[in-house]
Amino acid sequence: MRDLVCENANGLCVQGLKIKRQGAALLDVPELVLDGPGPTLILGPNGAGKSLLLRCLHGLIAPDRGQVMFRDGPLTADHMARQAMVFQQPVLLRRSVSGNLDFVLKRQGLDRAARRKKIAELLVEGGLDGKARQAARSLSGGEAQRLAILRALATGPDTLFLDEPTSALDPSATQKIERMILRASARGVRVVMVTHDIGQARRLASDVVMMQGGQVVEHGAARQVLDAPSSPAARRYLAGGLVT
Ligand SMILES: Nc1ncnc2c1ncn2[C@@H]1O[C@H](COP(=O)(O)OP(=O)(O)O)[C@@H](O)[C@H]1O
Ligand SMILES: [Mg+2]
Image 1 (spheres, rainbow, N blue to C red):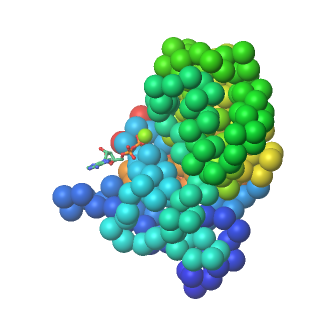
Image 2: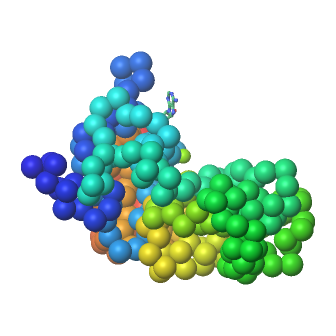
C-alpha cells in the first residue's frame, strides 16, 4: 500500500523514515508525499527536525530506516545530481561572482560561449549584473545568498532545497530572494524550503509541512494549515505559543 503511494506520486515521497541517535528518535516520518504544484514550506520550532528532514530528502544523510522515493525508485546519485541545496549561510568560492557561476557550469561541460551566455542570464535573474567581477566574498549578505541560489539554479535542478535562506537577512533582501524562489517555482523547479517565518510561509507556500519533535504533525494546503490547522501542535505554533 505504501509503495503504491510513492509510485503514483509525481514528486518526492518518504516512507518509514527514521533517524535515531542514542536510542532517541530524531526523525520519525511514516509517510510524506511532496507532489504539489508550488513551493512546499516546512515550518516548526527549533529542533523539530526540519533540517534533518531536508538533508534526508537531498540524500546528505542516510536514514536509519525507510527511504526517500521517486516515481522511478529510491533516491540515487542521479536524483541527487538533479537536486540542489541552499543553506542559511551561503557557501561561496573565493572567486569573482561570475567565477562562482562559471565553476558550476564548467562541471556541466558547457563550452566557453555557452557559459558566458548562461552567466549573463543568471546575473540578471539574481539582480547581480554589474557585480560580475566583484569578489564573491565581498558581497552583502543578501547578494551572497542570491549568488548561492543562482549557483544552485545554474545546474538546472528538478528540485531546490532551501534551509532558512533568509533568516539572516533584512526584509528588502528577503523580498528579492522570495521573488527568485517564486520565479524558479513558476518555471517548474520543485521548491522545498524550511523557514521559521510564518509570514514567509503565507507568501510563498502552496503546501505546508508542520513539524514538531521529529514528526510531521500536519501537512496540507498552505491556507488550510496556516488558517485552520487541525493539530493542536500546529495551532499552538501558529498562535506563537511555546511548543515543547
Ligand atoms: N548529527 C546529529 N547528532 C545528534 N543529534 C542531532 C544531529 N543532528 C541534529 N540533531 C538533533 O536533531 C534534532 C533536530 O535537529 P534539526 O533538524 O537541526 O532541527 P531544526 O532544523 O528543526 O531546528 C535536534 O534535537 C538536534 O539537536
Ligand atoms: Mg534547522
